[in-house]
Image (cartoon, rainbow over all chains, first blue to last red; front, side, top):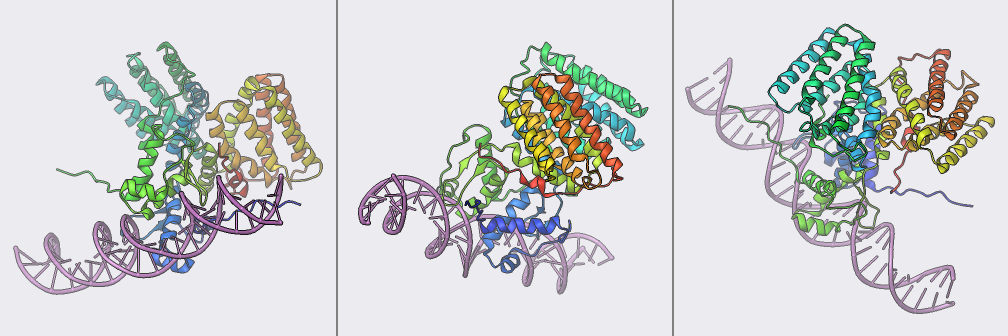
Length: 252
Length: 252
DNA sequence: TCCTGCCCAATTGTCCAACAATCCAACGAT
DNA sequence: ATCGTTGGATTGTTGGACAATTGGGCAGGA
């Protein structure tokens, strides 16, 4: 007969797992404040340093938030803090632009399609503002990659499909910065980009789902074409840029 | 005039950030062993307890691995440890089956398509084994959801598109367990499921990309139809199951 | 009334010096 | 060759201490 590998867990991992359980099962609601560290240590019957090590894991995962001098409080981990990590993991795996494009060309048009169906007046106003800002930036020859990322993230949010939003964000954080490297080669890139944004915006404004998806698809193909025209290797690993780090999680 | 909020970082966060930088910039390669905790504390000029708190964050993120009594060593964070977290975040946001389906129906057929193009003989053998195992389980009225998840994950891996693989995994971890709730309503579900698997396998074996995508698409539509036939509400939040926790990260 | 400065209690951040538990490799005994 | 044992290296955990930060209360002055 055989024995299954039994996992001995350090105390600090038990701490994080226990608290996590409480949160997942609803005994600890978001916004609740935890006992102080000395209290926790007393309740668990372990040392305060051990408690602190356990708390670090939950803190990073977004289950707990803290500020120096104030009590810990519970919060739900948003996908906001997950996307940058996923992007970084992909970059470390040295994924190619082709791999990114194959997925982006699926997700982005679908986001546009659902956005056209679900958009409210407020949504359209926000999109309008984004496009106008980007137009100005392009006119002034300012960097617009970050604005491009925001536009696509905005469309995804408007789609009201949080799975889609989560799925495309790591891709977007790597995909659009990859375009940055070809702007020097193609001076018209910014112009073409913003024209595409406006086409998509107008389609969404008319709630024309097919048209929105179509234009988003065109934009993706345009991106790919630009990449090839610039003579870049689509099978080369994409670079990790600092754009991806920017996404900070609102406290919610 | 105004001042921007300046962020004072605790020492333990500086520790994790510093080591992370070293890894990202390649000064620390995967497999390298870190200095011992006392050494690190001495080099940073801080206390060992503080070092340990910083290490916890990297440890959880997958940058560092450790075992009691042995030195820390560097490893790249695989997306393996990211997917369960993403799934849990989605579940906590109470996403609906419809949202999941809308994304799955995009990604899964594309995974099948690329798998058909890229599959090697070994890949096909692995798929064959998976299908056979599932067939036996269904014949014996054993649970097959976990096998189903594995099949789809396997197809995605064979696609050789790591972006696709990462994108679909959180969806899969929530989507397929959601089917579990309808098995009692639809006794034929397992049978239909495994027949679909075999169709997909045969298409991949022939490297027929269109056919593989087509059958995968059919399977998705079949899933959705089953969900509706069972009288379940597609807009109700999907439940969090323990299947998602199962994915453990191999040391790579 | 409102602002200011001050003190105080609570809480987290960091430090120090140990000891226990675990792992590994080497050595030796049967 | 297999099995105890030993010792060194490293992590896991402990206790107690102090500094830094926060928030609130409270008195004094404009």
